[in-house]
Amino acid sequence: MIFLNASERKENLGMKVWEKSLCLAFALTVLFSFAGFAAGCEDIPNHILRLHVLANSDSREDQALKLKVRDRILAESAGMLDGVKTREEAERAVAENLPRLQKAAEDEVRKQGASCPVRAELANLYFTSRRYGDVTLPAGRYDALQVTLGTGKGHNWWCVLFPALCLPAAEAPAELQDVLDRGEMEIVEGKDGEGYILKFKSVELYQQFRGWLQQRFG
Image (cartoon, rainbow, N blue to C red; front, side, top):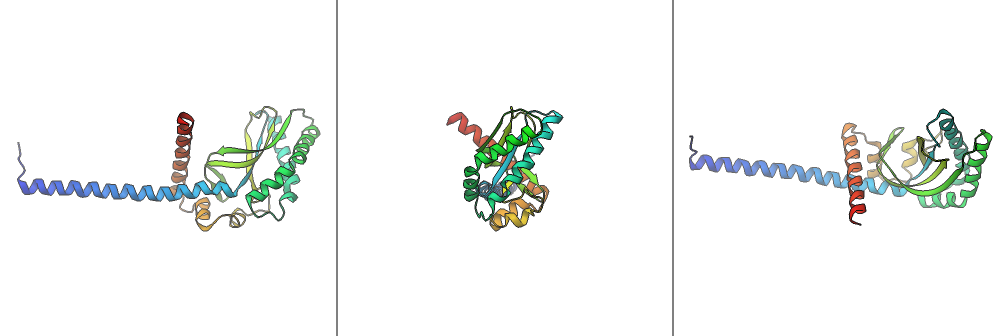
């Protein structure tokens, strides 16, 4: 058996304390960095109104109908949001025109020879992290205009109704700069690649865990 003298034991103890301190400092740095990122992610949904179209099923016909209804809703809503500056204003405009949007969707369904029921409503929905062109929207609960066709069990389609990122001429970063601050723009543009992908996934897992805790313990 090898015995360490007092100075060697003291040196090893000092190294362990130093290593633990270094690990703690690193952990705290990561935690604070994540906390700031998570806080920025949680505020982004407050500025966004999404469009969510749910198909009746995954059949070819139902998926094609979903896209036709999408195009009709986008055409119908384009003029509604002219001059709108905030998500709250956009939501009020959509709420006031909800019967019109419902009728437009129903008309398109009949035009395509289908007969499934249609429901258009404003809802607060949970979305996972989604990439849209050059930007990524973090996971969270977003207000959305949701259009459900039939059972709504088919693959869905989504975009951002406000700011107007759904329209072909829209440029995502330019439109978002009008409603997001600099820190939030850095989050959605995610210019450090893999690092942001990991952060977005971490936020998503954290929100899912928090939601589970709220359901479990109220």
